[in-house]
Image (cartoon, rainbow, N blue to C red; front, side, top):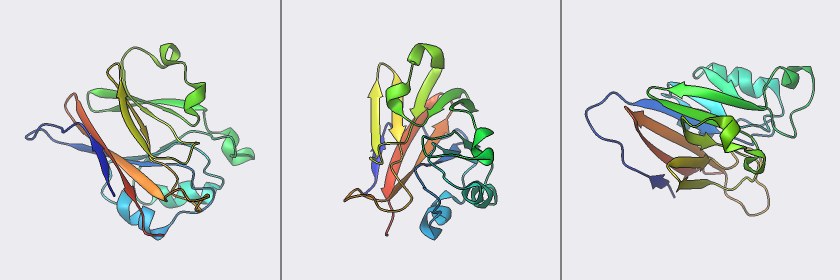
Length: 166
């Protein structure tokens, strides 16, 4: 079931940011289909295979951060954090939210995207929207297989997560 937060105003051109995390080497066809139409994709770590990034790059430009399970030469090229501009807003991406230093991220950050927990989350705190798209990779325990998106219009942003049929 989708989970959403904050409605963006109509009339402004929207930027669609596809959100994915914790693929652990598996890019499901349902995830790829959901991400089609994104202006760009953010992968919040635990990619576990360069092939996943190559497949995602066929869908839209990809920004990815390294997760705790990303090992090897391909993963060393990834940063642990990223600041990404989406229209008038700044996104900050980190794999493990527990390692976030919001002061280091910067005052201009409007959205923090994370992964690691495999649990989808959308929560706003002190004017910052925190989004974890959950895990789109192999099912872990009884947690849902999920993915997410941001819609950015001007200075407004909305987020949702969607459970994939797995």
